[in-house]
Amino acid sequence: MIDGEFLSGTAQMISGACNMAGICDRHRLLLTSITRRLAVEYPVKMDDGTTVMIKGYRFQHCDARGPYKGGIRIAVNISEAEVAALSMLMSLKSAVLGLPYGGAKGGIVADKEKLSCAELEQVCRGYIRAIFPVIGPDTDIPAPDMNVSPEAMGWMMDEYERMTGRHVPQIVTGKPLVLGGSRGRVSAVAWGGVFLMEEIERRAKNHFRSYAIQGFGNVGGNLAKILAERNKPIVAVSDSKGGTYNENGLNISALARHKEKTGTVVGFNGGKDITNQDLLELDVDVLVPAARENQISERNADKINAKILLCLANGPINRQGSELLGIRDILVIPDILANGGGVVVSYLEWAQCRQGFAWRGSEVTQRLKDLMRFAYKNVSETSREYGKDLYNAAYILGVKNIVAAMKARSI
Ligand code: NAD
Image (cartoon, rainbow, N blue to C red; front, side, top):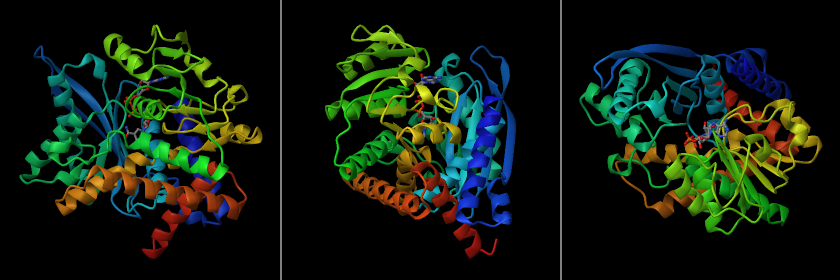
């Protein structure tokens, strides 16, 4: 039900943006449809000798701007509607960031916590064998998303190379450095968010200090680490089991050690336990959803007390929620702009692999910063041109950039 709402909400946002941008019905129809939906089931031999069938998806939304691009997530509760919505968001994100990509998304239905390392490797390799007919370095380039590590991307690349009998490091992004990964990819989403906040602070001539972060995985955990190094107080952090709060700021390295030991941020003795809902309602400068979709909507928007919502998760807020925050002057930095750092550094990794050349970390960081700033400038200009908030402006810019490519191809 919720995932159905996520998909219909995303399609409605695209449709609304097409209206505002004066896009014709034909292109609106294309943008609200999924080009290809691949659902697979493949066998995996478990450590105890039994065989289980694993379900997986690869959905491709639109490739007018270039090869399909998008992450793979591993979770027990993945639905086709969720994968479809996320593939649409990927097309828009790449278009907002000005990257030569279309949008896709993949999902593997499995409980990562219950798999041994050997079983997880077989799940990842089997997935690549199953979706092999629709991916390729110039057709569809998978990347990591929730619960997918660089090591897993390395297995996927290796499986593709075994099947093709040649080296193709540009087939996936987010790989380990030793296999052609890019410097900076693991923390790219977090750094992208930090660069955007720098730009917002520079334009607002104001410093935003206190942060609350929902999610303490790749995105939320790296953001917390970077902000702590910059002496920004992080008053609350949460994960799927609950959260922890300290009004004077949490000690992030001690919290990371606690999470490493216990598997959760709950029970940290440098903070007080809170729920995920408590975290969303805190009176902080910046609230960062960095976990899952569907966290803020018309159902709880009136309880949000932050000044800025930096959406690093995909789809954490719906249109109605965003409008309600806008009325209360809460600035929403939409996901298709805010978490673009991931696909930007994936693009830089793909470009390096195609050249057979590895750039220095400082080069990657500078390019990421430039592209994030440029995208923010473009979204801000669209916002002024159409008299809309940043959330709507990002969708307008995204659909316009995709439709420009469709028109250039006479689609
Ligand atoms: P991850 O699996 O590394 O971490 C997810 C975190 O969220 C974990 O701490 C988990 O415990 C927590 N979590 C899960 N359900 C929760 C809930 N209901 N309430 C609170 N916390 C919950 O995943 P990630 O890669 O950090 O991705 C997080 C978000 O960022 C996702 O929406 C993902 O699509 C988005 N994103 C990720 C990337 C990337 O490159 N990894 C790129 C762009 C966007």
